[in-house]
Length: 286
Length: 271
Ligand SMILES: Nc1ncnc2c1ncn2[C@@H]1O[C@H](COP(=O)(O)OP(=O)(O)O)[C@@H](O)[C@H]1O
Ligand SMILES: [Mg+2]
Image: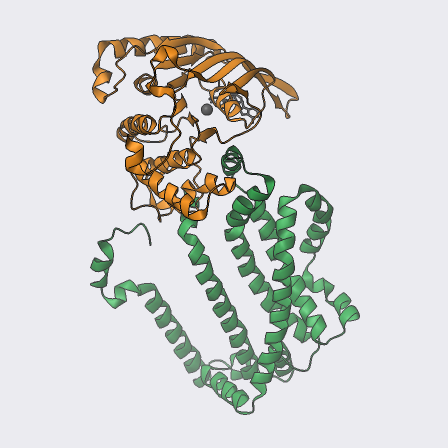
């Protein structure tokens, strides 16, 4: 396996098993969440009963109208905000706060500008204080290499391009060896060409590290290309409108975007979102 | 800087010295021309030397003060006042600013006092300080301290307070506790503001020296200047002015060098 080649130890999971036998990594059941708006003194219902599960080793995308609650849901899975009803389980444990089994890749990369690439990547490990410094640095270097940034470990974030910064962002999330990666529109700020390249890179990285991922995007083609299933959220308050299975070959190459089935799925998901956007008068999802 | 491609420094070396340091040379020429103009207008009798002295007279006065050794005593006295007052302001201002920026309750308690004192012109406190500390070293230190501590304090508070919310989310997501949040986020991200505060404080400290010594002293640059002023020795006043301005520039440059070390990563705050 590639892990030995890159020198990074990642916990193995059951990705090699047939899909039917796979365990469930993340299960959200009837998740409800309200924001309290202090200015108008009212509760805003954002999530109105989300049911969604993700199998181990799977990448599930979430799409939906702008402001429907996608980021809110992902943040709740990460444990940064608590939910008001229902439950979220990861490896069968109910989530109440952030934990090392999950890691978030935020949209605006939020790399610490005063830390070098390597220091950014090892940030989570530093906080955990679980391994000696030498081992931490070794793991950090291996991850920098894994995301294709060998030679840039000592650079500062502002010296990197947008694509490179997102690679660091992903490496930083991978460092504490989380089992579930939560990615919130990680490629939204990249130009089209870099984005396509990063999509392919992400799939490689996930395969190599055997991670499960929940991926928010507003690009329908990105969702289809990356995922085995796409969850379409309704307008706010969000429910699951439909979960679309992506019955395309497991090996994804850019050529797949020319497949007629790809176009078909694209049209289908676009229509679903359009229905929801029309309800709220929002047309800015794509 | 870091944006430069590796190939550029080599190409740069071929550009003439003038091109590379054009701003520096232009500034230098401007100063030389100004000094010439100054000297000539006094020599030609266009302006009385009593008002503006002249470069050569200032140089002569300086030479005399060095020869009789009085300047060293003045420098030593003012330097000590500065070191104590500014040092105290740093030692108290930075930790206090960090506490006030980080702990809402501490801030709520202290903010009324800080705001009131910050809004008061420090010079208005001088009579009180004289009553409390007399006119010897302690009163000068107190004046410099009070002039300096507020810019440092307020900048530090702002620096700690303006942590990017996204950074906090990242840290929390990695399971950071409050102590770690403070050490790994609040401290490093407030460094630029903190340095700005130190630089602002520097200017105020120099004002403090002059103000403090003018209200009565028996040595110091400010004292020397006020004494010379009272006896119409414009040349000596100008020497004092030069020393104050020169040390201000030197200290500010020193701080800038430190700031530049941090600017490596500060650059991206622009976009
Ligand atoms: N911290 C917050 N406090 C109050 N309302 C919020 C907060 N964050 C997001 N919202 C609101 O919740 C809704 C969902 O936001 P979000 O989850 O970011 O949507 P999405 O990621 O799908 O675009 C929006 O209407 C937004 O204005
Ligand atoms: Mg969002």
